[in-house]
Length: 97
Image (cartoon, rainbow, N blue to C red; front, side, top):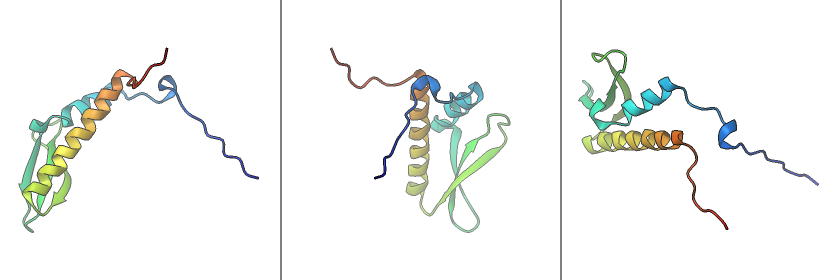
């Protein structure tokens, strides 16, 4: 017979993000720091503005349509906004009396 033992971590035992990581998440969770550019091959590339160098843009994804590129940006913004929300601690879903 095989038994499976699992281990869970509490919030305090999980590795916490650094201040630099949190600043990065804040930066890329704002849509104003993103842009879409057209490449010579016709594809569209999503890019976000570098925190360290405002003149530098960092490429992320390539899409065939503007709608697809904007959807990729929206998904990235939403993803990092959720990560920021959880830096405040665990979210209480239900309590019992």
